[in-house]
Structures are given as structure tokens and as C-alpha cells.
Image (cartoon, rainbow, N blue to C red; front, side, top):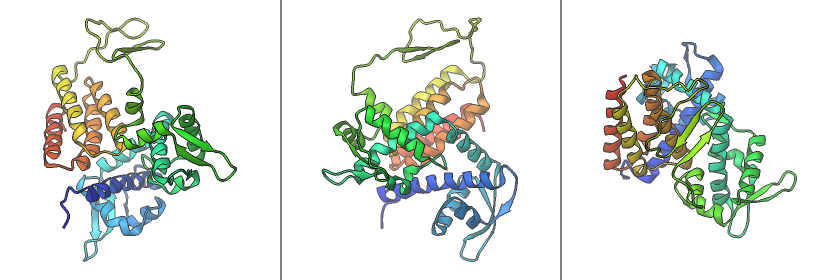
Length: 319
């Protein structure tokens, strides 16, 4: 019998989490935010999910408080379910993420190189059309498009990560040496590329009405907006929030994350760091962090670290 935190069970946990995203978005597509009792199999078919996975998907959502089981068969199979407010909120958050072109591009940049690596025989290339059957074809519960895929392939070719053979109806891709190095890494493409060339730890990006600083800025006095109005955090204790962010970032290396989940988690923690003045938004972001971290904690120490960090965040932010 396998240990409950084995890599095999970790794989199925990640797979179920991504299936749940497709289920939630399908619910939103079919009924919007209306409170409705329905049979899960209707949504399973709409989301192109296998009926055999229905119990694990509904069970996952029930455990996270995203669905109510209204009726079930003697063997425990859910026959009628309804969405909770938390489930509909999660679905709406997925829809918002999926509408971002930047998010979709980043997702494809991460998954296409690894798809090419995993599907290219030695000395040969991978058939790009097969990507439509890959889990990477789905982002935040929605399908990507071929136009997006082709644009991402062009970008990765330009960055020296893919070699592309363009034959009408039979495009093929193969990772370069640099692409193979990235595919074997556990990080995101952004993290990987940052290690490939010297870079400054203090970078300032200037926009029309604001200054965004990445990295440390000792002694800086930053003001934003045309009237140089300083934004002050009154919502959550600044030092406590900074401590929480540090704690969450220290947990990340202990987790077993896919490249897409690692990218999402990094972005969510960065978002949380800037939401101290908006406790309500911060609580929603912390819930998204929790959804990624909990199934990725595959060791006792990692699980304890995640529980401690989430508990601390819940105490700080409430809810």
C-alpha cells in the first residue's frame, strides 16, 4: 500500500485540482451565479471530463466547501449537488484569471517547452497537434486556442528554447539545449531565465503615473500618481503582513509543484503582499494560496509548515 503522500497520489491530487477548475468554469458557463440544484454528470459532459472521475471531483469540492451534496446513492455517489458561495467565488476567480492575456501567455510559455521535451523521441521532434490532448491545453478551467499556442511557439523559438518545423498541418517542436535545461528544472520559465544571465537585484520600472520597484529600495520615499499621493496601508498590520509573506515564501521550496502551479503560487503571494489595505481582497487571495499549497505538501514537515502559515494568515486577515 502506498504512503498517502507518495508521488503517485500527489500526481492524482494535482490532476483532480485541475479537473475541479474545469468543472467550476462549466457551472458558471451553464448557470452563471444562480443557486441551482443539478446532477454532476451534466457538468462533467459540458467540461469534457470523464464520468469515471466524477466522485473524486465532487469529493474534492465537498472537502473544500465548494459544493453541497443534496442527494446521493447508497454507494455514496452524489446524484444532486448545488454550489456554495465559496464555490461560485472560486469559479468567478478562475474566469477572471482566464481572461488575462498575460496569464494565458505565461501558462503556455511554461507548459509548451516541457510538452516538447516529454514528447520528443531522442533526436526527433514532437507533433504540436498532440498538445490539444495535453493537460496544458487547459488554463484556469478554460481551453487555450491554437492562435495562442502558435504565438507562444513563436515566442519560445525567438527566445532560443524551441526549434520549430513548420509544415502545413504538421507543425513539430523540439527543445533546444536551453529548452531541455528548463524542462528539467522545477521552476517557472521566468525563474529559470533569470538565472541564465547577470541581472540586478534592484530594478525599477517606470510607468506613466507610477513607479514599481522590484527588489530592495533602502531609504526610498516612493509616491505615486500625478499629484504624488503616498499610499499608506491602514488595513492590516504592516509588519505582521510582511512576516506572513516571508513565511509563505519560505514554504514554497518544500512543496511539490508543477511549473504552472509554481507560477500561480508566486503571483498569488506577490499579490497578497500588496493587499494589506484591502483585508477582504487579501482573504480571497489567501484562499487561492491555500488551494495551491495544501495538495502540494507531500511531506509531514511541509504539511505542518503550510498549516502554520495558513493559520497565521487566517488569524491576521480574519475569515
